[in-house]
Length: 275
Image (cartoon, rainbow, N blue to C red; front, side, top):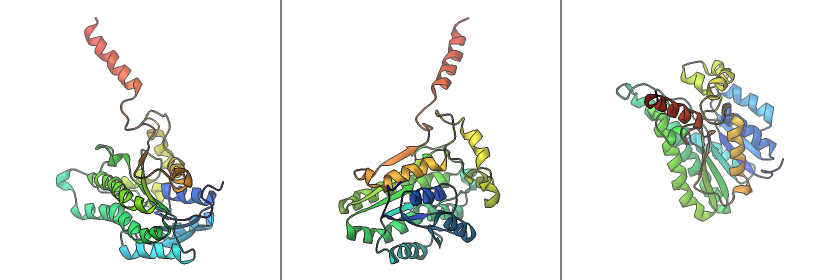
């Protein structure tokens, strides 16, 4: 598998879940991969398992974003692919109880962090007139009601729009910017949203599969590999004419109601009129 052979890639939030699987798939496809994260112990573990290079960093800090890109470029002279994947759970609750500090933190990680990494990678990509930037959005960024946190939904909508805006500017210099919007993906994020310790939450992915399998038309949970495979496509030359797109990988979750649900409702309605 050599779809990314010779490419240098940076993946933020690569220590677990979707990010880790993207790191694994990029390495499998021949890329030289650098990935960042805040949890050093997990970073070391992933680096040892994949051969990728770990950079301890907080994406919400501009200086960390600059250092991440500079580190990846130092030994290679370039970065060909950037995946802005880093994210996390956000505080939920009703509007009147929303913490503005928590809102600011969510925006800082998801939106400001993505913008900072794009800022520092774009100059070297412009110089070479090529590059692929991939931002991880969410179905919650398309429609309300798919996240328990208004902060998360707003942040992901901003990430998707950031991708479009950047695509129209950078596309003129041969740089493609696209986003991927996952649906329900079986990772530890659901356990984290319930307040579990991050390590314990990672072990709940199998439990999440059971609930998620009933959430969309395709009767199985989404998996990190589903998102990683889409990322491989967008990072590869196979997608050289794809720019400003958002790829929904959600099993049909936001497409509408399932046929079986419509049929059940129709049957119930018919029963009201037919004695």
